[in-house]
Length: 255
Image (cartoon, rainbow, N blue to C red):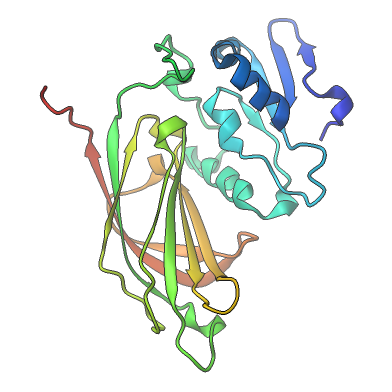
């Protein structure tokens, strides 16, 4: 981790330049001229690191860096927050070797629209149905049956990012949902990450965390799948979700 004294410095190499930027600097650069950031990272390296005032070891959203072509996003792994989950999930791809190819949209000469982001047409629709869950009840409400719900979110480039939430399954230790279908149109599936979070609803105090799981979309297999849930630290709980994944090519409606 680098100190703020070196924030935003350019390290020159023989054939390439690497920009080290904190999250406020990157956000300011994106707001000022996002096109130049994308063009820069086509031929040079960029590295995002958490702001120095994050004393609680929390993290910047690494998707902010990846969406604008940055190759590196430093993460405080002791933070145990969503940024850690997303970072681990991205590098599950490509056999977990630690290298994931940058999306073609950030390498080729795609048009850049008024929002300063390359926005190709959606490639595919990912449809998700949360069916049921099991093996969570041992940690919740010993004397009353728990109330569970699931957050389903997509982390991705630009408008690929969406989030949904199921209804609360009231007073049941083996919750089932109606299989409501959540649709995610994906323009850049190469770096898209799907996140599941299970929460126990509490009317008196804050809802209680029950587990999470994140996966790279490109690694998903269509069909009904078991989704193992992890703790905030990434340790397997033993609890599971049963989820149906459906992939469909995006079809352009006739005008």
